[in-house]
Length: 467
Ligand code: PA5
Image 1 (cartoon, rainbow, N blue to C red):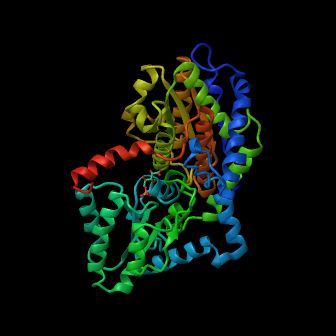
Image 2: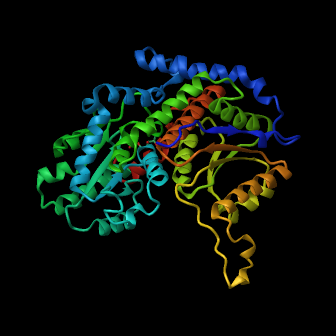
Image 3: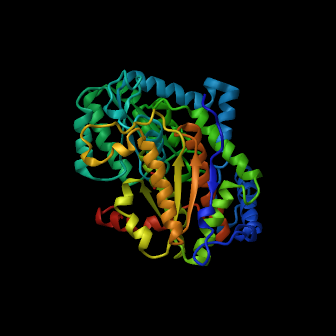
């Protein structure tokens, strides 16, 4: 097992005269940050645990995500196969033995975390490898996150007409149109592939949903043996470390204990570290202060690894749906560098001064870095850097971009992780979820729920004759 250390957050690039923050800005905000933290750990969680009376302005109170990783892990350590995680691992193993392709159907918080885990922790071309190279882990595809007929039809082409594929259908409410419509289409196809054999179909479908609702009833009617629950008190975009993310993660063969350990360790750090050395509180403080004092309301998450793009998209949803309310809330934007230095950097360097660049920087590559070879054909003049690795160029680009922003007094901050693995990913998930809730408490916006999403649904249902 590789060394485990906590990620670090460095905001020195935001300490700028005139356009950024002062050295002691966070100290001035410390009392309010601590009060917001107390609300999250001392108010939200006990209220959730005891099922106590939740004041109307705090509803829905979906703080269950805070303690969930520790609870799931402790339960697994205590009861092994009988625990929820033990059952998830067994279901995953069974599905892996039956199929070679899995379609995860879900939208928003019901799929983005799983996608982020696959992209960050599996081979970047996982689905293109043969089964041996995948170590028996099925190919995984994501659908039901749209109603794009061509895309769904194309995936059905890939799945073919054999019975070597299965479905994980995830919907907390059980009634989301995109997921429900896709489930019907894919279930129909699966049923044909299984020659209508009810047992075979049921074995190939794993639903993750609320305790009751349309999907729960449908899954029961199909005869699914293992139906996993999205726990009460855990909102969709906060559910990545519940069965919503853990079922796909288990099918992908990820190290779930490490994922949960990363999240638990981040909880511990969040609870105990003081402002100034608390990654969650410092991250919130810097983002908030720049927005409040400098009108910096565009949060650019700049990931310096292709494998983190889906994590960035997961975070875009988390921040946008949680804080984008009451005509307020910063706008998230993920960029993948160095790719987007050639698309967005012009604007970030010289456009409006409304952006904070938060870099996520990965220290160690998974594989030996590729070096630039010497060549007799030196027309590209690269022999001067021969022997340097692509990672050396990446490091130079990170330093160069940060320096360029600093020279023009544009704020940056850095999150450093050691490597891309489950432990570090668990930390990142929990850091961002906690930060989002703390920010909500700091600015009096309830981070849970997404009432604004209902507006389009109402009209869509009318157009479909459903309302
Ligand atoms: O964060 C949220 O709650 C939403 O993004 C939901 O995850 C999304 O709307 C899907 O909902 P459901 O899981 O009920 O199908």
